[in-house]
Length: 498
Image (cartoon, rainbow, N blue to C red; front, top):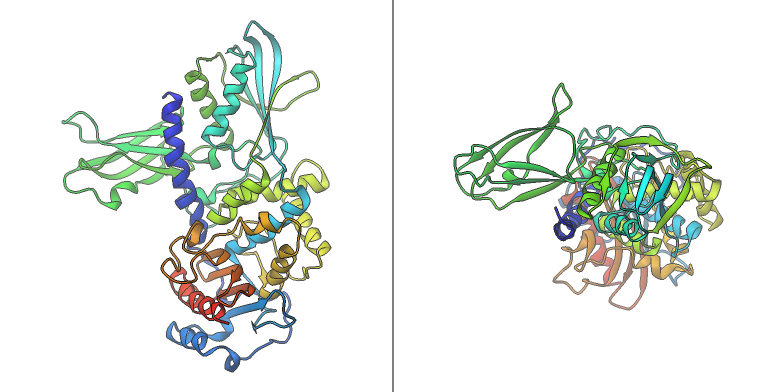
């Protein structure tokens, strides 16, 4: 595959990841207690009778008890909230907790922060030939996707490296985290939203599985390929069928057999155009190595060895450093498309930056809470967990989320923070909401949905020109994406007219 093909792969593959795979954080179904444990609770600021009639009607129509929802709406320039209901109940916020993580990152790192990825030499480089090993060391870049990684490797070629006689050594010492179990959350171990963090993370840990009808008319199976190409064996059990192309034909089932081979099962119509899905099928280090191996060959380089895990030593020589897009650019991808693994990388980076390497989950959690406290935000009862919201343990109240939004609005980095949120009717996870209404383009909001949890938080410029901060959190058995959105929409329409 030449780079031109890789570029096409990214243009389609990245779109898939951002619009489907990564955003699935907002549609994941997972078991979560309908009544999350309360870390603390104060007197409620409103009663059911004080809720707006349109809200009460929506709750009634959707069979949602008023106690299952928290609502906070306030003009940022007013002393009192327009609506404050159950605002001190600690609830599961799903992906809206990304607002906490990204704001803390802006405060700790600054919007111009960039991650580096390094190449080190272990051996002698002469006339383009490295008689030794090349060490790749990452520092948690959340966005080392195809084009970025290809650029990094192209720069190695421009620096004069042509042939590597030794191995590729991956230095992953910057993170000190437990081994990630991608199936622990909901059993969907191959889905991209369940990918785990890694110091050297290529393309969100995702591989592209390409399925296309064989050119051989007598074939009974389509061709199934992995990109980047991998040394792992594939057991292709997909069958070719007649008839029109259906959605089911682009949803193969993945599993592993007793020998560790990747089993791909399903059916594929001969009428289907080539179909691709993004899935996590390799360990992070192997995934990076496979991409390096493929790209290096495309660039005309040669590699004599294989993959090893190690670390940079004092005798190794720094050869090249690649800088990522800035934090301000990356949080737009995180919040607009609700990318989980990028957020997890971000929280670990914040912890390492504040308390020193290696990055740990505890350092990340502690750093985020300390930063909130420094901004005057009440952190009692807040549980950060992994920072992404893909968790059954994360907790925050509507009042605390509103405090964060108010602090962020008055912050010097407000433009970067607000522009990272989805704009209803225009982009991100809210691209289809309010598209044909006057409310389209008038808000910056972050969504979040798990089974038994739905939430939305952010800012609105309403019809009267008031800038509102809005937090809506719903927990309970009727907090599905569809039901939750109906209730949220009625609350947002009410706020728009105030």
